[in-house]
Length: 216
Ligand code: AP5
Ligand code: MG
Ligand code: ZN
Image 1 (spheres, rainbow, N blue to C red):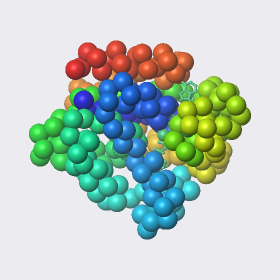
Image 2 (image 1 turned 30 degrees about the vertical axis):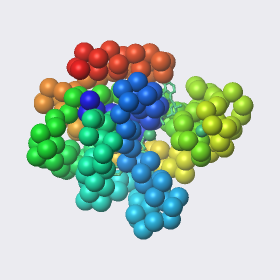
Image 3 (image 1 turned 135 degrees about the vertical axis):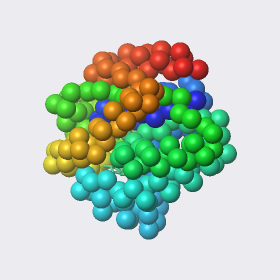
């Protein structure tokens, strides 16, 4: 199963990805997570990406595309994968298509998680992420049992640097201009499925798995 999760910042891509990869036993490939991990390791890639991420801008296409292509060649991705946060521009989508055509491995489907812009701001500014395992929480909508402590691994929860009001507004604008056109792009290919992302987390999950189970 080769899936893309599409949706604006805060739509719940990461939250749903955590649950989907457990059910379908495929790797979760999030370009945002790859950049944040690179930054933590202090690599050149991490430092370059940070300049863009802190501004709420996209990292340049050539950099992102090479990383994803390499990742998709790894052993664990040969029986499928879930892409989260990639592609985010038409150029990225075209590059992915070309490489999937070359390897004869078409996408199973693109899940578009749709949420009203007003709700996204509240979701992102209240988000907390685990330093240990990357699990995602929300102070109001999905709080951990003990404040600032991860339920899954006991790790410390932190707030992402790009989750400030100013940066979130910029990210939403960048989404509108550069990523939203992918809805039409995949719609024309007949592989786009839109789910209502403003429902409860478990309901969104049920909607997505109903679609994917039909596609298998
Ligand atoms: P990335 O890390 O991909 O961030 P994003 O796309 O902005 O998306 P988010 O991770 O913020 O949101 P999400 O949809 O995963 O929501 P989540 O599940 O956490 O990218 C960061 C940056 O990296 C980019 O700005 C860019 O600079 C760079 N980058 C990454 N990929 C790139 C690419 N391909 N090209 C160029 N640059 C790239 O949920 C959000 C919150 O809501 C959480 O608190 C959660 O608990 C809560 N929540 C989730 N679902 C629900 C629900 N149903 N009801 C109530 N609350 C919910
Ligand atoms: Mg995410
Ligand atoms: Zn954790």
